[in-house]
Image (cartoon, rainbow, N blue to C red; front, side):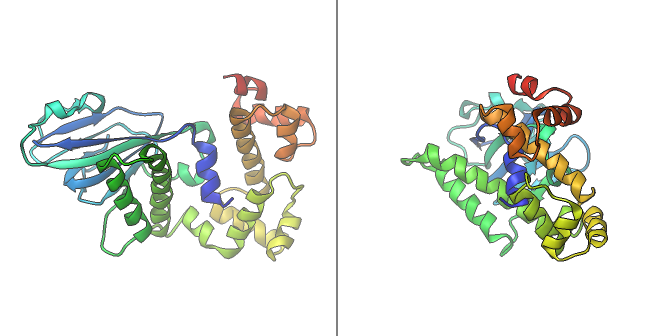
Length: 293
């Protein structure tokens, strides 16, 4: 798998949830902080997102906003009431049934485990806003259109289609953010040598890699690779590999009943003792305790 796919896979837990909200008068909704990532897609009208700090963000039709760290926030129309209604309590009965639609939104969330957050996702800002600019990010626009059609019509297979489309939405938002960002992980993934090294480590983390063998794989000397990788990724290659092995192990412990010896071998440890010691150092608990909790 590639780095972005792996980053999403290890962090995600459960399936994404979503709900459609239609307002026919001025409105203000409050979203409490959440242990995961939230998102909004504006299907009709316009509104503003009020983050915990900083200026409001104006959202127009087709805009997508991701709150990757689950920050609490308000969404509100123009001339909104001062008091916000919690999102969970908002229902069609609170709107004027026969009035014109002021706004229509698709709101949802992805449950995540912050202890397994990939540094690519950890560097995301509290609010990632992707405007619906003409011609920009066509894949994201297509996903938004498909999502809008699914939530508007209760067609056969809707319950199967929505989770897949919500997963696509997350991927396309991350792609759009990386494409618009000239530094950090965007640079790492755009650099052919560093991107190749990352791909190799993610494809086979159990291999007994060294900086020398990794450099030979991507066509760079040991010293040159170490400098380039550390500058763009933020940590040396073997340090990143050790972190990735244990993060992958945490996912396997949560999602499978494989013996500890199998998990240890699958992520590159020759003994359960060495694996358990390293795992406890990173996560603060032994692998068995982590699985049980």
